[in-house]
Length: 126
Image (tube, rainbow, N blue to C red; front, side):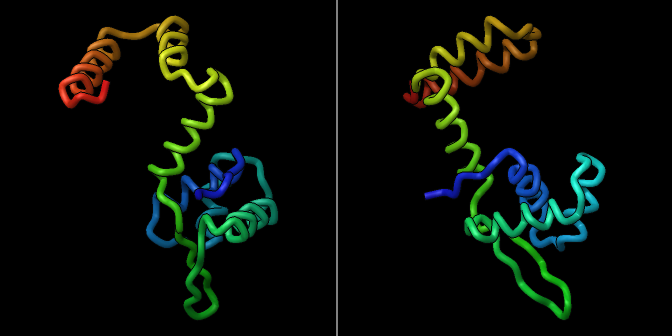
């Protein structure tokens, strides 16, 4: 069972996922460019992720190096399924139709979707 990660925690996780091991100072520096959070807010988010067992750390000298305990791919999959269940009553078809109708898709986007659907169909996933 994957931990439930809040929107703010996702921002921290994205940074942790992009590195094998990273210090809180490095996380704070990266998030300072993207948000207006204080360093204490970011440290609180890190602690929440530690408590949820989404991340862990390794101490070297006086420095703590944080790393992910959960896969980005698995978290995205679970979050996607949760979204589809919440918003579209579990229907991927409804979500897909809504997305296609509400977005202006380029020819490249349409061709890429065609290729994905054809590949899925050929593998028997549809």
